[in-house]
Length: 401
Image (tube, rainbow, N blue to C red; front, side):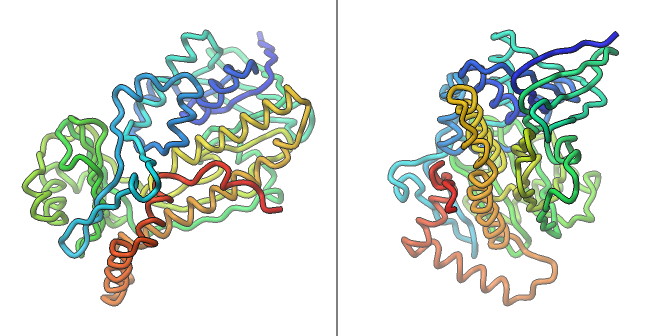
């Protein structure tokens, strides 16, 4: 027995981008059904980034899910850059006229969006198998999947592909219609999460002769640390003690004295890549978030880019349903990509500045030190890194043609 469902927007993927789009559309009175291949618990178990730009904070408020974020999130007005054994602070708040970022884990954002969707009784199909998208080059696209043993056909006006890098949506686009740009970096990030107080009240980005390190946090009692490691390293090669010892070697004396160690709650090695798909619209199918682009985590842009994709898409769909205008739909890809490429550039540049590359000689380290010295001691240099880190404004992405 099969089930047929009709909705206005089919959203593939129940990560933060899909859930945020669903919530924003709900607020605008537009029906949406979310289809997700894994369980809700699995989605919540993903350990991801936790630095939110002001634009993302505003979007979560607009979606009506910002209460706990404002209560529990940590507002940061700057961050430290450590090189040559010394730390220097980038005063984002002072340089950008009062802008900040907020440390609030992606898992918590997802939890808040899930709770809001459940409270509103909005339909979400978790653990959907055999998900397929079809007819998106017509005005009657559809999604088919199997849920709890039942075949389901979801008819809709639009499909939002929020299903990540390995999702079905981008894979369903004819290869001749899509162009992909990719850079794979020759190292990964070994991350460790622990219930220990952060080493510092703001983030510390480390350029060390031994490789990059990042001291981050999720709360005042939970810390997240990263080490640059070769791609050949395996997780079993790194005990907790080995991780803490290597981190100490990359920090300055003050940070070493403040470091509190403890057992890991989670450890993982993540490869780094820059990836962009062009375009992001294919008829009535739209890509958003990781389905369309990946950034190295150095610039803390992944979740924030996904959120702005969703904002542009929501605005386009609202314009279509309320004003019968296709202007927003037609400009969606160009608007997103203009912002995406700026964030990709920043993340690539910051990654290149802070990491040690295997094939680089001593001269590259000198180049990095010279550029870091310029950034710290030049107002223009510090302003550039600060305004990119806090996030460029949404209207920065207006198409130039």
